Image (cartoon, rainbow, N blue to C red; front, side, top):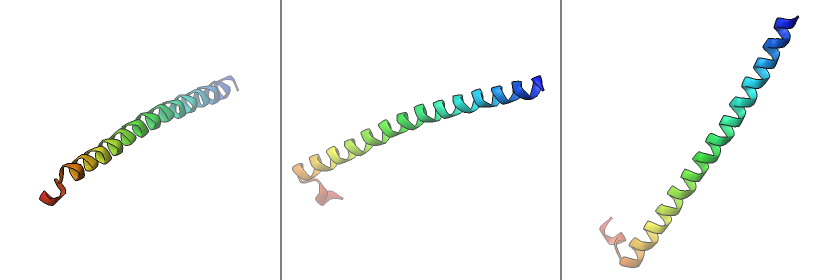
Length: 56
């Protein structure tokens, strides 16, 4: 019984760590995506402002 409880605890801890890591990874990815989208929008705005869309 002790082994089963130990495995359950280890599983819960591993699951918690996986979820925590997933949340950190998700937040990191979200930040990257937001920055990329923001950069793309900014670049698009600059190219429109400079009249560079005619080149594309």
